[in-house]
Amino acid sequence: MIIKGIWVFDYPLNEEKVKSSLVKLLEFYPHVAGRMNGPNEIVLNNGGIYFSNEEYHISVLSLIKQPRSFDLYKTPIKIKKLVNGKEPLMSVKIVRLKDGCLLIIHCAHVCLDGNGFFRFVKNLEQLYQNKPIQPIDLDRSNLFFDKIPSKNKAYKLMLEKGWKPVSINTLVQYTWQKFRRIEKIVSPPIHISEDYLSAIQKQIEKKGISHLSKHALLSSILIKLSYKLNNFKTTTNCSLVSVIDLKGRLSSFPTSYAGNATSNITTRDFNPENPLSDLAVIIDNTIAKYLLQNTDLLEEHVLLNIAASKYKIPFTPFDLQAMNAQKPTCLYVNNFLKFKLYDIDFGMGTPVLILPNDLPDALKIWPSQPDKPGINVYLRGQLGKTYNKVKNKQIWLENFFNHTAMNV
Image (cartoon, rainbow, N blue to C red; front, top):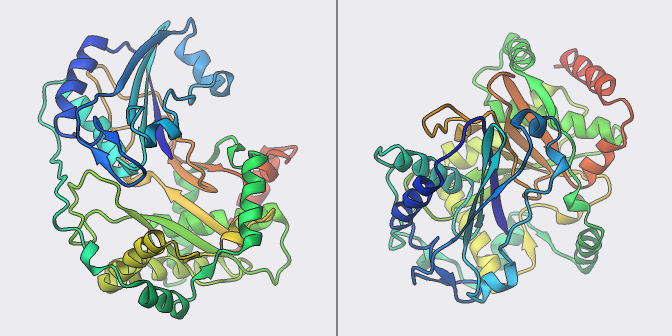
C-alpha cells in the first residue's frame, strides 16, 4: 500500500529549499531513500526519491470548492516495480497554484505508518525553517521477533482467542469487490461539530459515565450511523475494529521509532440498538484492556498477527467476511485526530486544507479545517456506496444526529 497526503497552502513554497531540506531529512530516514529487495527487505543504498513540480491555473478557493475535480492521488510509484527495487519508496510533488500551492507526498506504507508519515512532514517543515527535528529511532535490535510463537502454538492461540478463518468465500468476496473497485468509493465529508460532541459528552456524564475517550464517543456515533444507513434489523449485531499506534505502548517501539508499527483491536459483538453510552463503554473498555490494563496481552496480540503473516495462517482477529459484506457488520475505523495534522507551518501559515489519505478504511475520522471546529468522517467501500445513494443528505444527517442525541 501507498500512504498519501495533500497539504493545501495559500502561499508558495520555495521549491529549492524544500529539495535541500529533503536531502538533509533523508539522512535520518535512510530506509525511505532505499530500495526494496522483495516484499520483506529494504536495501539502504541511498537510491533517492522522486521529486517533481507542476503548475495548475486554478485558485486555492476553487480547489477547495471542488477537490474531486482533479485526480491528485495518482502516484508515479508502481507497486510491482517498487517491490522489485525498481521504484523509489517516496515521491514528493509541489503544485503551484494561482495564489498558493499543494504539497503532495506519497510513501510506501512498509516504510512509514500514519504516525511516522506525518512526523516526516513535520520534520521537513522544521528543517525548512532551520529548526531542530523530532528524535528519530531506526534501531531494530529491540524488536521482539525472537518471541514469535511457533506455527502450532500460534494456531492454537488463534483458536482459543476466537480468531476468524479466512474462507474461500471470503477471498472470492474480497476479489469481487476489488474487481468492482468498491473500495475506491468514498463519501463526501460528514461533519460533526465540537458543540454536538460536547453536548453528547455532557449527557453521558449525567449517567455517571466519565473519562470516555473521544475515539470511543465518535466510534459509537459512527456505529449508529452505519446501523441506520444499512437499515439493519434490531437483532443484528456488529463489532468494531480500531487501528492503534504501537509506538510508546510496547518496549520494542519507542515513541521516536520511525518504522511502521500499528495494529488493531476488535470489540466483541454487540447490538447497535443499545444506548450510545453503552457502545462507547464497550469500545473504551476493550481498548483499555490492551493498552492500559495488560500490555502483555497487547504484545501477544501483535506477535500473533506477525505469526499469521510469517506462517501464512489464514486467520484474522476480526471477521473479514462481515467486514466486506454488502451491509458490513464488522466496521474498521482509523482515527487521525491524535496527529495534529494542521500543525504544519512553512513560515507563512498553516494549511487551509489537508485532504484525507485514500487508505481503504471503512470509517475514517479526520480533523476538519481550523475554521470549522469539529471532525470530518469519510465512509469508504460499501458504506460509502450506500451513503452516496442518500438523496437529501443534509436532512438525513440532521434527523440522524437529532435522534442519536435523544438516545444517549
